Amino acid sequence: MDTLLRTPNKLEFFIPQFHGFERLSSNGSPNPSRVKLGVKKRAIRVGCRSTSSALLDLVPGTKKENLDFELPLYDTSLNKVVDLAIVGGGPAGLAVAQQVSEAGLSVCSIDPSPKLIWPNNYGVWVDEFEAMDLLDCLDTTWSGAVVYINDGAKKDLSRPYGRVNRKQLKSKMLQKCITNGVKFHQSKVTNVVHEEANSTVVCSDGVKIQASVVLDATGFSRCLVQYDKPYNPGYQVAYGIVAEVDGHPFDVDKMVFMDWRDKHLDSYPELKERNSKIPTFLYAMPFSSNRIFLEETSLVARPGLRMEDIQERMVARLKHLGINVKRIEEDERCVIPMGGPLPVLPQRVVGIGGTAGMVHPSTGYMVARTLAAAPIVANAIVRYLGSTSSNNSLRGDQLSAEVWRDLWPIERRRQREFFCFGMDILLKLDLAATRRFFDAFFDLQPHYWHGFLSSRLFLPDLVFFGLSLFSHASNTSRLEIMTKGTVPLAKMINNLVQDRD
Image 1 (cartoon, helix red, strand yellow):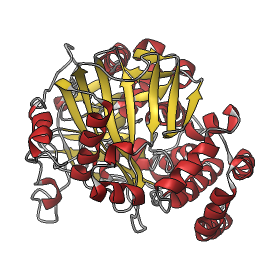
Image 2: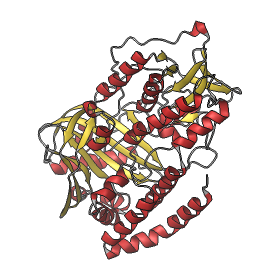
Image 3: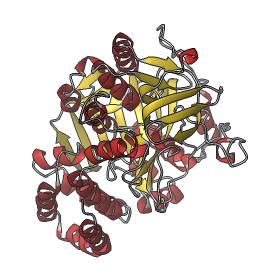
Image 4: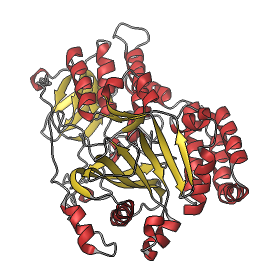
């Protein structure tokens, strides 16, 4: 599904990506949490070890492809204060850099690999990218999607879906940044020191960059943006491959959004038992009759499922579907923290994306939501930073507070609280209950399920969404929602009452 934290083949499970930030311990040495980056390929044991090992043996080594751009570098000798320093060169960081620089403000983007093509596979609803004028950044589109509830029930979703062309999206963003005068610095960040009006970003190469505003776009590392509450998210975990196959049973005109069928586990009672408690589904994007993206996904669990467990289920599923993998172009391990508390609001460093709590707590979606939020952050920085002669000009803590307020207004915070309520229910559902839930969910009017997945529904509509879902659910599902949702509902109501502007 939509994934921003896609870790390449060689990264350790549950180690977050650090897009431009290097976490240091108190003595200045690298934090131990970042040491275990190498992970050995392990055989997947599903009855026949040789079959499982053969699949993993097809996984290529990690490829790093850089774009052919001459990036204008930040001149360290000038000791100039820039208007905005962005730590992290992912989609969120570049989107804000592009839009702030368009207004004539000076921007410096700091990332250890600024020209590296993102390794992530992003899937989005076409209407989301159409609204942002990014249709040219989709390399494949499907007329709709399909959801397999079980062997006897299927939902056809008439909502076009697309796969993001990572190279095209980054190239488009970089080109606009270069045209607008954005400067780049290739390094990691070790610290940020705040003064009354400006902040100093300290880089691992010794360079110090002064800025009026610092934006943390480092993903899920939560290194610059501060949290003051226990971090207890659920985790979406997935293993995916882009593969050349002899064939597959799917319609190439539709992508498979969810496949909850479990017939493939009949020969593996231990796996089937585990799946009945914490289920996984197949997500698939067929590019042609012999090339396909396949991903086995745990929607949300706490703690997250082991990667080996998910791989075992995937191998069993492919065997059952008769999918013979001839070659793997790339593989990816996905870990997405979902839900949990928001960061401290406000605080001096501004955030966007995963570090700012913007992952959809019920789905793991973030890319389209983050790109749509980039203009909000950019416009706030431009509006409140202004010029030195402007009466509206703000600096330091006041400026950051206004940007955070625009990024997380009370209606967005209330929306997220409802999504966390949904996540808390999903965490408690076994396979049978999950099937009943999505059977009702995708029977809703498109306005409701489109809006829920794309973060377009706000609290009044979300209340009607909940009532509609309840009315479409079976009696068994209604009982499950009531019994498993009572405590989360009380928690949500309490948080809504306490959260005031």
